[in-house]
Length: 119
Image (tube, rainbow, N blue to C red; front, side, top):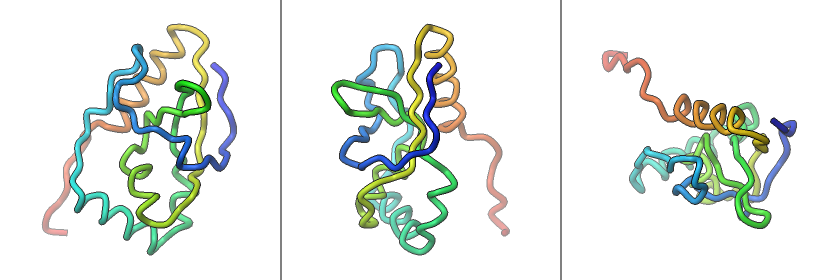
């Protein structure tokens, strides 16, 4: 699989994963406007944090990139006034590569562990 180093990508090129690629199931996560606003405030408060957690994307149609990890971050970034996000672009070359992307999308969206509400 071809994979780029982290690079800045204009938000306008990043598409949320809505199932537009036949081989990649749509992002199952749902969020509210309150979730988007909360993430945007976090990005405004600590803008450098996002540099260490790049968006993971794969080519879509034209020059679009379909985000398979960090969809909420992508949606919230524009609300925080960001024009671009750091991204790693994965270009699958075979079915094994597509399976790797699907697995990583599941890991990103999995609900592992639980919160200690006392903390």
